[in-house]
Image 1 (cartoon, rainbow, N blue to C red):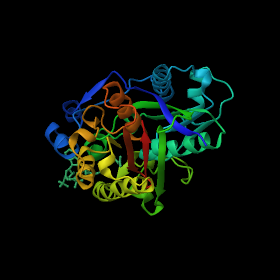
Image 2 (cartoon, protein in one colour):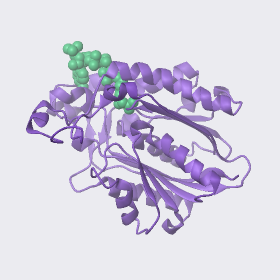
Image 3 (tube, protein in one colour):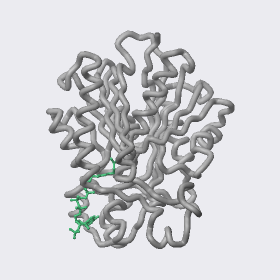
Image 4 (tube, rainbow, N blue to C red):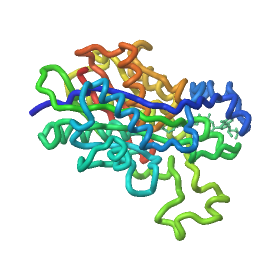
Length: 331
Ligand code: ACO
């Protein structure tokens, strides 16, 4: 059976920088509060007219160029997002069209912050069984258009940013290269702990004036509950993939955690006993871009020369659902 190698990475973020001081002009918050609780200094928010599919295309083109393969080599698209451009169809088909591709299947994955790790699991399975040779995996979010920018929404609005990250996954027979193990999990008992209630087909109508007035279309979360579960589940699932390969945290060269909140990443790092140089964080500059955080961080780490052939790289994510997962890759 072939293994799945990550042969190229890319990302795209909007040009518009929104600082903590910008947010403090719209809501009762401060640069100090945001930095202290989340580590975030600034994030990127799209201007009107930019779609998720357009950012995904730019990230994908950058990943294709990095891999040195043409778009026509892509056999399937997997796209993780919790903020699709439209209720339906999924953003994947808009991305396919933007890339000028025809006929390749497009799978939109709804695993929120764990979208990239879930996507790795699906794409790896397809590649290993020989169904597809080259898969484009993208995480993309436009969070900014769905946030309550008033003081009522400040606990959520300060956290999120927009962006896209992409990876080209391809079958390889090279020894000592590729995805080693992936584990994904979910626990639906916590579905409403971090969610957006409306608009929804469970509501009659899907979106009412009353929903809008009550702000039910904005995301809501119990932040303390999310924090508690995230810092337990991420070390746990990373331990599972390491154990499956007979490895330990001492073997890890670089961990790329989902960029939920710098405090969460730091606690995960502490629990795993990893030094600063073995954990990659960029939430300071981009905020939490949900399904896009890991592929954006991966692309940046790659461009900064942080990944060498043969390195053991770990991805770990936790988010709405709850969903969580981890993957280990020999670079
Ligand atoms: N600016 C200023 N004050 C704020 C803000 C803000 N942006 N947001 C909340 N506050 C206030 C609250 O109103 C509250 O005031 P009160 O004491 O007068 O009622 C006070 O700050 C404390 O609020 P808490 O919600 O208890 O703040 P907490 O210390 O829990 O920090 C935070 C909130 C940062 C969200 C924290 O719960 C956390 O880190 N949670 C993890 C969840 C997370 O980061 N999720 C990211 C997205 S999910 C994911 O990707 C997995």
